[in-house]
Structures are given as structure tokens and as C-alpha cells.
Amino acid sequence: MTTQIIKSVLAMVLLASLAVPVSAHQIKSAITTVLFNPRTENIEVSHRFNLHDAEHAVKALFNKNSDILDDILTQAEFAAYVNERFALLNQDDSAIALNDVGFEVEGKHFWVYQETAQPPELKGLKVRHDSLRDIWPDQVNTLNVEGKGDIQTLTFNDNVTLLSVEFGH
Image (cartoon, rainbow, N blue to C red; front, side, top):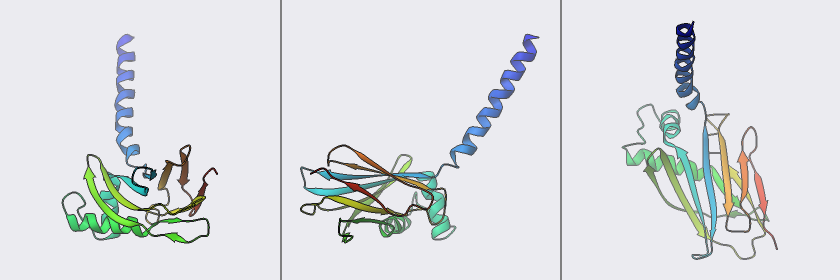
């Protein structure tokens, strides 16, 4: 009887281990940090994408031979794509111009960096973050705003295109 139980447990463990990699590739998400840096008086934006997602994305966005791991041109093209689909707006709905700072592959992530000087008397932000949502409807982009009071988190999913945060007075 114990042999049958051991076989059943081993079969369940095997099935569970096979299911994990399949579901891991189904999660499409990115994390962005908008940091109000008091030392530099800049707004620093860092976008972090799972490298696996970025690999699949560049093949869908550009061409099937795109290589985000080893091709600097593909990396630059993907960074430009991210920059085009991300925007910060002030309380008057005017775009805050962001400068492209760079990009890098680091471990299992692809990073894209932007920054700008902090506008005076900014009472809040409206944010658009559509990266990868045009190719994957289930893509979720999470954004944390730091350095202006408590951390505020925005989640871009489903049909959400514009979200906002307000800063204390």
C-alpha cells in the first residue's frame, strides 16, 4: 500500500513540475519606477522587463530574427519602442518631456532608463504605460511612484490607458 502512495505522490510532483514552466511563460508583466530624486532634482524612470518577454516581443514587433540578447540595434529599437509608449503628463495634461538615458541587459531583465528635471510645483502626474500591451492584451505594467511622500502604485491592465497620482501639499 505504501508503494502505491509513493508512486501517486511522485506522479503528482512530476505533473506539478511540468506545469510550472508552462504557466511561468504565460505571465506578462513589467515594473516601472518613477523616482523623484531629491539629490539630483530629477525624475528618474526605470522600466524593468522580463528578458524572456522582451525576447518574444522583439520577434513579434520587429522581425523573427531580432536578438535582444546580443544585438545592440535590437536593444536600442526595443528601448525606443518603450519610450514611445510611456508618457508622464502634468496636472494640465501637458506632456513632460523625458530624455532617453539608456538601456541594458542585466541578468533576467531588460532595463530602459529615462529622466527629466522635476517641474516646479508639480501637484500630481498622469501616466500612460502601453508597452507590450499592443501585442499582449494580458500584459500588466505596474508603476511605483517614489520620493513624493508614500509610494503610490499604478497598475495598467485590461483597457486602462491613463492613470494618475496626486502629491500631498
